Image (cartoon, rainbow over the protein chains, first blue to last red):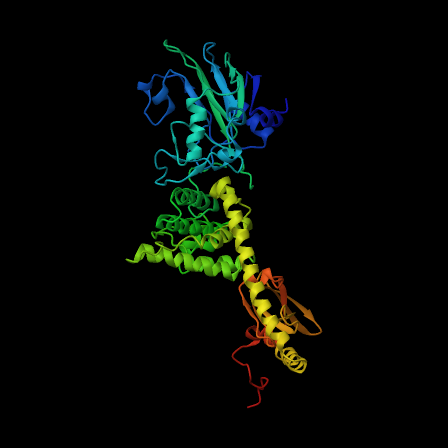
Length: 218
Length: 312
């Protein structure tokens, strides 16, 4: 197996190609978990493309539907989101791409001081609590244009850089085109999204697994 | 591990709020009362975060163990109380005990600043109006000391631009202390040199006798070079060892007060002592008989009685 940890540290993601295509998603996830030394956070989930009307407004599908899913990190509004994210193709669609870019590239025109001081809060209370979250702290980077609300000027600058301006870098486009095609993303460093699925219904079915990780104590 | 929400007494949560209050503080004109008010709220978060960095349990009001359980991320079954943390004056006292560099002078400033905040919030008094900004150098000195103690940069809380201002103000505070103490020392030196040789010798001898090691740390007076005493506050945990049958207790101390019995020079406050070369920490050493040291452990209900005797 390729050096997953090294690839994740450099690029923030790794395209594992046809990764044990005969294995179930759970079996594939367990192999990756063993390689990373991380635990599977919960059972793999199945993702399909749906129109906005099919999902509630507290979900990405309910807001973006068949359109492009903007770049984000998963569960960015949580205090400690899951560390790694595995996406594995069950039914491919050559017209739909998974978009991936490391935050250091996406935000390279923003000063380190601004990135470190940028604070957000969840748009809604979570378990009855409201709290502040740094854009990056203790090795965790987070971003979500929908579920995070800027809480200071630095955060507003970050939002402009990620939402209102074109990114200063290339975004990787990976087509999960056939069963077993798998990518692994470092959810604490790297943004991901999805291109628009087009107007016609798509059978695309992706399975997703999360792995937990430990914070840096710096 | 994943988690939805941070612990509300965690250093990160408290420091994030400190940063939020600092931003509000710095948005105000410095002569306005709101500048001082937000500064006090920011300082409280920094004090609490520094203690929480050692352990969130140190923020809990220990009168109810449910508060300690909450600090440790647990909730006891049936516990309905809202978690209660220590009040800020107790937090300042704990910070002083935990961080030797956070000296009595800084603790006193914090207490005063929090009194202003209480007065602003709980009375009709306009506590932050017309107080100027002369408190700002001490304010930043306190913030920097506590943040340094937990390895957090001032820039994280106040931003790069304000950190440059804060550094200038802190340096000015040191320079001002140096200037003030230099003037006092020179004045005492002049008076001392006007005395005749016999008087000086007599006073120096008296000072030597009166400056007992039992009362403080013996140093040379910067004005008259007689033996004088420095007293201080504990600056870290004490250590005890056994030597020649005695318990030797060593306590690191940070100077807070100087007095010379010969020329009557008195210097109060760490910044002034530091400015005239008397700011070095010293060790207070005490020798104790083991029986006295462990007195409470030895004492039982038969203490003071003769040995047991079953003769009728």
